[in-house]
Length: 111
Image (cartoon, rainbow, N blue to C red):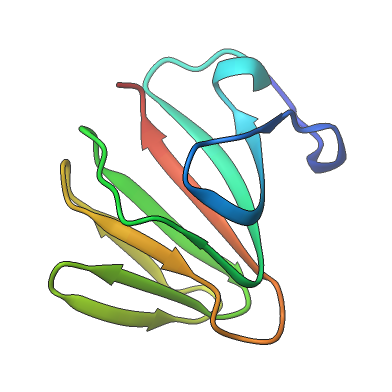
């Protein structure tokens, strides 16, 4: 078993992420994993990611707050415990348009 305490989770700094704190819970520098890695992003009010895509699918779960997810098809507001899946190469932008931080779990296979 590999346990990562949230307070000890290694921070990472992806390009195009503004006013966000991103940590890895499992996989990469957080410990061994075979098929996917998990992370949590805290997005401050006004924080966002630029519109971009990755070659692998992504799954987001809103842990707390309100997250706006924009794709080329439009925007959707996700609330606590809502989730979404983005297909490989589907462009997305995450935005916190609220006045409180939003916390988001990310599950993503290794590239």
